[in-house]
Image 1 (cartoon, helix red, strand yellow):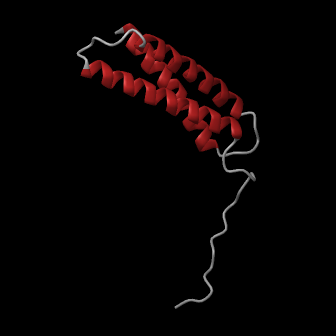
Image 2 (image 1 turned 120 degrees about the vertical axis):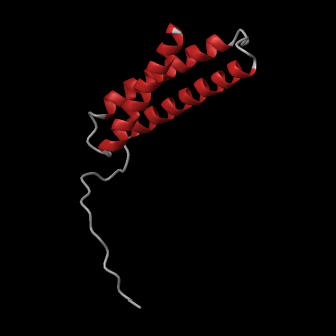
Image 3 (image 1 turned 90 degrees about the vertical axis):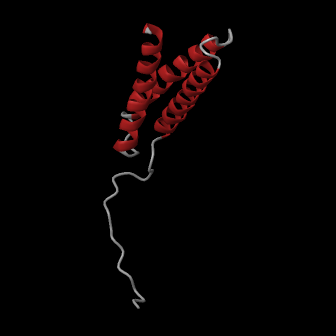
Length: 106
C-alpha cells in the first residue's frame, strides 16, 4: 500500500478550463439540436402534419445556431480555455446550421 502517491503533472496554459464564449456557444448549440430533434420526433409522430408553430420553433433553432457560431468564432480570440472545446462548439454550430439547411432543401 502506497501512502504517498505520485501525481502526474500536466501542462496547463490557461487558468480556466473552458472559455466563457465557448460555454455560451455550446449551450446555444445543444438547445438548438434538442429543438431540431424534438421537432423531428413530432413530425414523425404526426405523419408529417406538424402544427403551425413548428416552423417558428425551427427558425428559433436557426437563430440559436447562428448565435452559437458567432460565439464559437469569438471564443478563439480568448486566450483562456481549451482548444478542443472551442472546436467542438464550432462543429456543433455548423452541424446545426447544415441540418437546418438540409431540412429546408428536403
